[in-house]
Image 1: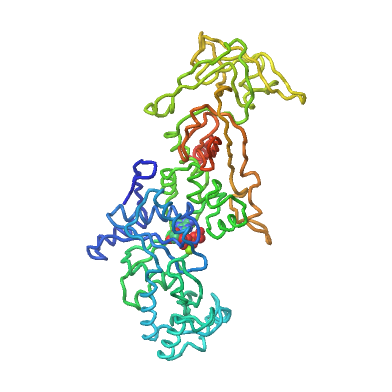
Image 2 (image 1 turned 90 degrees about the horizontal axis):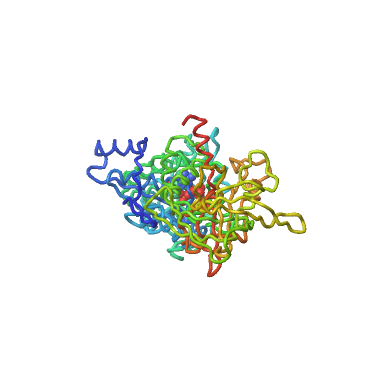
Length: 570
Ligand code: ATP
Ligand code: MG
């Protein structure tokens, strides 16, 4: 089940010893399910793209089963035809594979509509379900509150025959949307509101993405989920904490139908600072065009993270490190970034790129083609080999690496100062050329031919090494720099009357139209991990078209988590 990823690397085993794995181990020890293998499922609703919160559920559902030789189904919880689409079904499968997992069986709750309907008839026949004509508003009023018991519906004591007849006619389409529901007959005074005669079926004349117009009644989540688990012989149905209050109902249906005893176990939702993990709100960002789409590299969706250059390995490591517990908390985004940098540092191919170019002319270097210098592809990995990078009399450096009037402790290039050009030569700035507005547009330097390869010829020290790109060999590219999408650690923290949209960071995207790159970067592939030396981690964006390169910055190089860890003594 643990799979290899698209990048071809082996999935590292994430051993998670926690209350979930202990529970599974205990059930195996006591042979709760006889000799049957552990069966789990990942049950997304196809109403949006998967986000990194889902990655946690996926790693647990697949990972825990895999640790004990069990199996995991992918089951689409497709009981809300109005919100669900094939596009989502496809993207979810793609993202799970990308994350490195493969399912035993591909299932759809909609495949069970027939069985669920028969079971509803059984509950009606047993006097445990009834058709209610109250409106949705009335049902809410009759339901009571946490402190007051509910009231019985006047339709609660309909005869079995009348209920069977009405339910059959609901299915036939005789009644308009919202006019009737089927409810379980449990306890209107239960302290758990979910047990106060929960709705099992509603009338909805809507076309389903798989069953078309076959059905005009659809099961509610609570009635569909546990029964689907049971149909698939799911032993451990893990879900996030908000379903804890639904557990008694989950058990009630299974017990009263006498079907396979699946068990629901809850764990904490992943929540990350500066990040929204709610499909509904992410959909709003997409629909209102606050982002370019579900896969906008600023989105916490798996497709957005992938496009941004995040790797499945780092996401899995992060999710494992964030751990599971029985109370919801929040994880620092810096921790995710830390694991991602760690992973990219090992695997990213290096290249030199100048984002804000300033021209440097080396006056004593010969005119002409220049030469090439040999550079390591990844100093962290000698197996990555070397490449030849062209060097010539005219180069670009970062604007920021030159100051005409250097502030204190500024060790990069300034008039009279010598610096090392990475893997090339020592140069000393001699003079500048300015435009009419007084901006430096060209720096004239001299170089020391004896410092080839960036080595000091006589032991003299330079305090700084800067990167460069030969102007005549440079390739142009658009570079997209991303910052956090939200300005607040909790994007849902807004004053009354406001919305999470008020916390959007207006500076979350900066586009550099014409960066200058060493020629080897023109061969980059979409998704390939890259490091632009001294600048950050990048990857090629699928917007790249013939002749026009587009790169995304995955992350800058600065690791703030390492500092947080050190300070906290972690
Ligand atoms: P959202 O609130 O974003 O719409 P959801 O819970 O409605 O999420 P589903 O498609 O129903 O999304 O979720 C599939 C599975 O993923 C469920 O088991 C759910 O518990 C789990 N899940 C969703 N979000 C998170 C999260 N942030 N952390 C951990 N598990 C999650
Ligand atoms: Mg849901």
